[in-house]
Length: 87
Image (cartoon, rainbow, N blue to C red; front, side, top):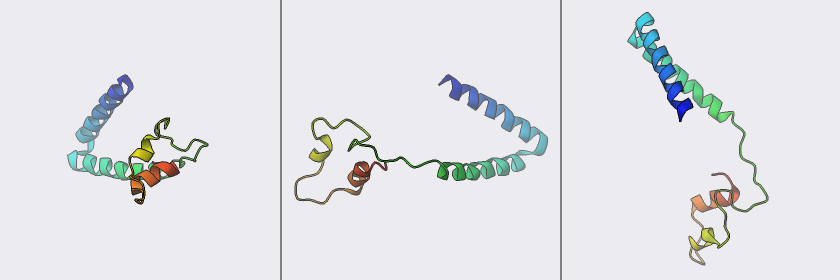
C-alpha cells in the first residue's frame, strides 16, 4: 500500500507539472493515450498455464466447485473457465 500511495503521489505531481507546462487539454490527451497504450502491455502478459492441480483458485478438498452445479445440468461458463485455469 505504501508503494501504491507513493506512486499515485508521484503521478499527481507529474500530471500537475504537465498541466502547468502544456495545458489541461494536452495533458488529458496524453494521459488518455498512455492509458490506451497500457492495454497493449496487458495483452503481452503471458497466459496462465494449467497446472497439475484441477482447481487453481482455491483448494478443493471437499468438492466445493462440484457442489455449485447440480447433477445432470451443464456447467456454468464461469465454472468451465475455472476448471480450465483461465480465470
